[in-house]
Image 1: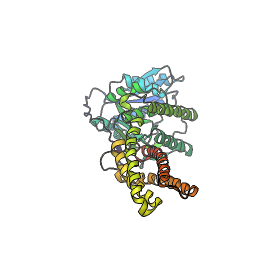
Image 2 (image 1 turned 90 degrees about the vertical axis):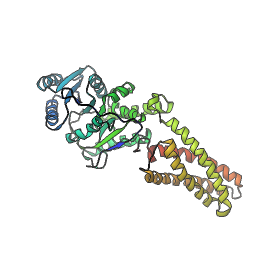
Image 3 (image 1 turned 90 degrees about the horizontal axis):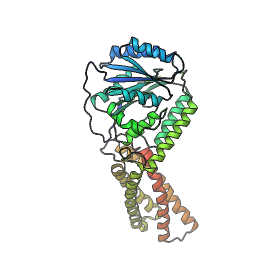
Image 4 (image 1 turned 45 degrees about the horizontal axis):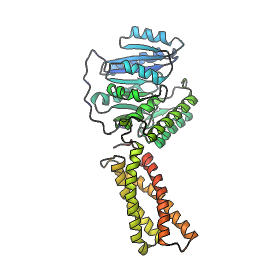
Length: 399
């Protein structure tokens, strides 16, 4: 298994959590709906694992959201028999609603949840919560999509999971790798800050919480996990996919309008676009000046290619620092390499525009060439911003 990773954002360092042997440090929530067949076995397995190997006081909370079978009776009996177990009953369905209710009433400094099927190997639980206890991170998530994760599931689930997370990265430009793994933890003060901003009460709750955390510059720790799919999962895949797509569209609209709270849009797309525009304006002027200086000596195509290459490298470095707030040398070579690939797209676009001009008007003046290049550059600039945001830097990528 590979080392866990944390995206280091702009949040101040947090103090380690002080441990009182009489109070739970971790409240591990198990949200359930009609799980009479698996609930007792899963909770007892969780309890045995935590009792045997978890070095901090803990509590297991079964959050029953509107079950209609024997789940409430089983949960109540487990709460009587296991001193570290409790349960609460909600009259409406929704995983997000269950987590919100359980986390809101918990006094534990670290809040977490696991799916009742325990698909995730429990050995990853301590690596998940330890960075929160130490103050190293604000949130922690298990990821099935990182190198080193070992996952057993069918091709349909694999396709849907990878497709969903690819969609998130391309539309909302997030940096975390696995939004929907049912294995997450958060410090209580962070949950208290973020949960009032989360609108979803069902399956998109996780994703929305993570997007808001990332926009607020909080540190998200990722732990590669071993995960085995539950073939008897009760999740309605089609309904969940549609709900997630609606959630992505809602968050995307809020970002574009600047409707998210200010602390969650501190480095949002509108501000990034303004800074990108300033850098791009300088780059465009520099490109045209270099093109004009080189045009007589090298010809139009070579002058355009050389000017665009020099300006693209400078543009990538400037956007890395000023637009997307990426500091330090980590990832600089990767960013420049990807930036050069984006440059190739821009070169293709502007070279194609020049070639089309010369084919249509072989005697076009230098002023006409510059006009065509400006139009082509504006188109290439928009494409460049989208690719820099979603792929090169990813706004949530490792700093």
